[in-house]
Length: 487
Image (cartoon, rainbow, N blue to C red; front, top):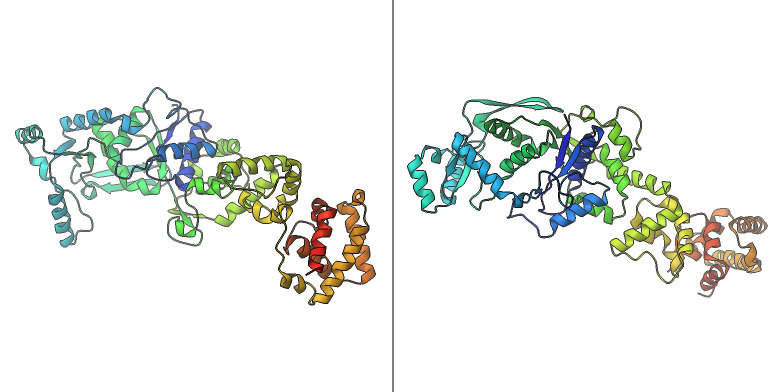
């Protein structure tokens, strides 16, 4: 059996990071078994449809490094792969169910349905259900209403006093009483299918045999199984993945805690390979201590059996930062510069002030690379390399405890640095001579070098001081020290 998996996002907003985790697992399962991964766009919810969202979700999936064997832009034997272009297919299958007695026309008005819901609530029923009122209509009554143009939906005829067994690859067997399942609308009055009809018809016609999806879809699964059986089709293999929660919390991932859209993480300067590596472990565990996985390694090691049986998995944002910092450090300075340039252009972010050549920026990049956790931090930690820093005089004096001591240190090092030839202006030579002066003047290393650091950068934390001075150059270093002595 050729493994065929799919991801079927809805263009109702920005693509959720949890969706990207689910896509990753579906992709890995298909590729591990030399199968096919299909992308399908489920755009039948017209009330929540967002213009441009489909194009954005396709773009972000590509930005994370994924492609698909069949779907929008690439086509395939089961095209079209956008549900709004398949309406005739869904109507044909809905009518087939009506003919078989597994579905029926419902002409109830919104007012009647609302009254029914309120009545059932008043009776204390835990859930509200349709009462099968229109199931008793005769063929003649149905035809008369259809001829009169009365709006209708088509509902699933759920058998009473029965059970549906979901055989889940992760959760095991779960039983659902049919008396708890509503006669779900399959085809809406506007001719669009609901999710339940469309997903079953498309998964069957597109030969999807593994359905990996989030735990939130588990209550829908018995409805889907009823539809498969009504059509007489073989069931796919189901596996419901744990949902994501904030670290230390019990609720699903929330915008209140930070980004939740896949594209937001890219905009904040996370690398796709770091994001994917992080997402791999949100439910799956290799059973080893290994934490760094390329996509190819993950595909090789992935199996549904290694996905944990749990409701919620912690989305540890600190761990994501750790991953991103790791992947940033694996790049050469030139590669990191290229990634920074592409990222800043895409997200319309200015990396630095002034006209400087790429060689200088690459040197700056190399110097701060160890400290970066996201690309976005680059502008914060390198500003003083590209523009004159605004130095807090209080912060400067704080390093020694007095203005007089600060000025003494700055004067001493100004004289030293003025005497050094540009040819000798290297980190090693500056280090050597600065420590000789330190010993001669009996300065404390911390107060002396922190005073210089603050004077030339405005910061208390920078890369190694003498490497910073080397890159700034003799002229700029002297100018910045003089500026503080003249204040």
